[in-house]
Length: 320
Ligand SMILES: NC(=O)c1ccc[n+]([C@@H]2O[C@H](COP(=O)([O-])OP(=O)(O)OC[C@H]3O[C@@H](n4cnc5c(N)ncnc54)[C@H](O)[C@@H]3O)[C@@H](O)[C@H]2O)c1
Image 1 (cartoon, helix red, strand yellow):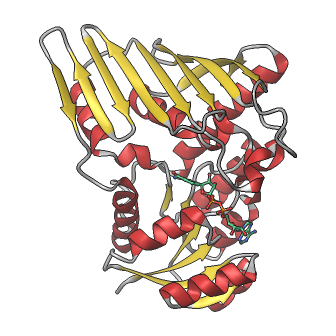
Image 2: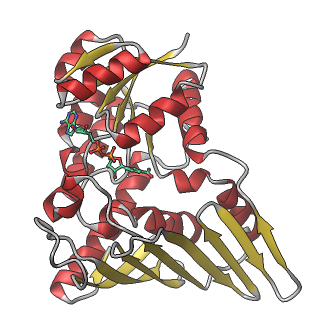
């Protein structure tokens, strides 16, 4: 039987999952909830299913096995708790929250309920990441350098710290998470942020540049920097250094440089489709082994980015 899915939040990223789930034959989208009723209704009409404006009503009435939570970052928390208490398996878009206390509460409920759970850190599912993992097996990472250099997303909530958490937490979180996936857990973070170029944008209180220095538990070190002041496209990636080896995941492409040669691996998969297919398979089989980012792991990436924001505001390194 197909896994019956309900969405909470039907905006831009939810639509990306809906398009990919439409091609997953083991999945059936049946319910669409958004506080914006027009959006809920138009999405239900587009994919077929029932529209809701209240997630509690959807959880009570709709016959669903799993919930995709794709809401604005500050809206997370009770949506996940209610879904899990109703016995639904859970896919959550990153960042899982903008508050560590709330993410810990959700994690406790997930553990109590024992539901399958996954977080939308799709960089973990890139074919480039698969290759990088192969090359890094048995190698000791010395240092990483990550960057997310681009423009400001068009959605109004992104400009408000109390809604998005800022660029480290909302957007550059992919790079922090990828660094953790390859180099392991982070021990301490020191960071700076500033508002330098976008002061004239109305209603904006997020920094527009930021840089964080990381110490990993392994002893490796790294830096991750971010900006949203550009309008000429994005440069997003992570460089990983080991002895006589440099890996560069640049968008979805991987370049491996050694003293002997340079090899380029172009992308061979759609990582959003991969994470959706794997989540659906995990729900069907009740086997989470292939899920690459559990809620617990996603909450750890959140904690690193929140630590960077805290360090930038109080001027001290933060131990995790
Ligand atoms: N993985 C990625 O690459 C990627 C890309 C873009 C966005 N995202 C993440 O996806 C999430 C959503 O971003 P988006 O771009 O789709 O934003 P969006 O503003 O387009 O959509 C968010 C939707 O959530 C709805 N919503 C808010 N609170 C709700 C609630 N309590 N119940 C029901 N609906 C509610 C809003 O009305 C809106 O329609 C964010 O966490 C963002 O960080 C991930």
